[in-house]
Image 1: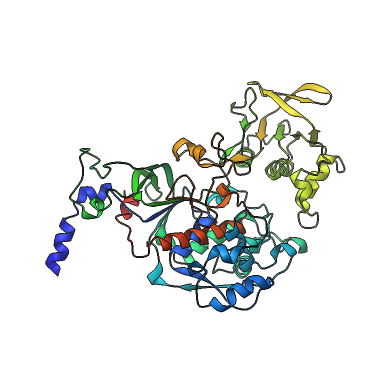
Image 2: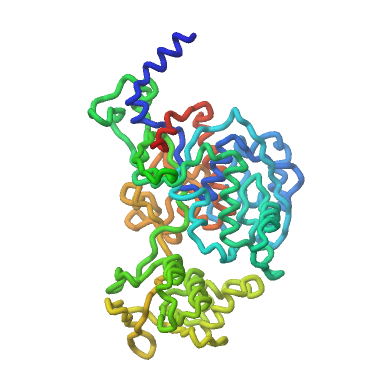
Length: 510
């Protein structure tokens, strides 16, 4: 036996093993939807707990199969007839089991339980540019979530219990009003996600500080030696992949302990894109928008304030936009006692303004900004310019704006253009443009998401490539988790349970 094992080891030359790391599944992005998928792929499968459900029809479909995981059942049948704030039936199914009657304001406990089947785990690797939690670490830690805190919850770890324990250990936590107690700060949510990976023993799957630069389908004789360019035949594992439907995932990994970077390449049959909400800021498309004093993120404004660049009373900032990020930027300036001019296209009374759709009792901080926009509330350092647009930015920090009364010029220290964002899919061929519902348009969260099979989340025009979360239109965490269920079921059906990764540890080695 020892001789046979030794022969197999010698058959895998060191050069080939270093050149061709392999994983059955590669997940790009390490936010909440990727975490949920990793949880399922690690063998934690969801079951209906049989305690009854407000939707009697759904209960009737599930009650006789409590011993079978949802992964083993017909998701199309179970999700038929469900309605809610997602276009994907499996997302609605998972949400209504995890948060029954949530949109009616009910606080019904989850109707799922999760059982660990180690023999059903599917090897995978999760690649993220930052810490586990993804874009949640890039947001203002003190801002409250729009959704209820419990809607940020991931399977198997009660958010309410976790945050109560976290707050009891952190006395510096700012007190919340009665109406805000059910909300969490963005910083708390980021820490919850980080702890989830550790407490659920998922760390072995996560490779943080890893930037994916390319995902391409390989064709022809692709198992080659990267130095000589010749076909590599000494590794039985790699040679066995010849002719398979493979993707090559390339990127750069940064080792934070030594601050050194290394390029890598991983072969895989299945790629899941879960890169979340924060991509490239939308542009106004006007002259001078690329000047240094024009920023596209709230974080840039915060950094300038914290760095003292905008600390004097003579500083003035313009904020362009009427969404939540623009409101956050306005509040950031007010907190720092910096004069701010707020420019937005619509009338302040327009019901389509995002702030107008938020209940005053639950979101008092945003309602205050809305009152400032309408002129109901006054602030000497805040100037609203409703029905205005920016015409151009100049290198001398002058900004020309146009409104109902004509054009005029403002002298500013900084401009923050906060009018939404588009996903950054630069690592996909043609930035994924050919994979949306409208083939001639860029991928957009709202108007042109990636086109997927709703019961597998596989991209319709790219077999083996999957997408979930905001990229397919599920912008809320609670709905993005259903995509993980659909993907897991499909991967299990492909027989990946007994597959293995190969040499993934080489990606992170110096």
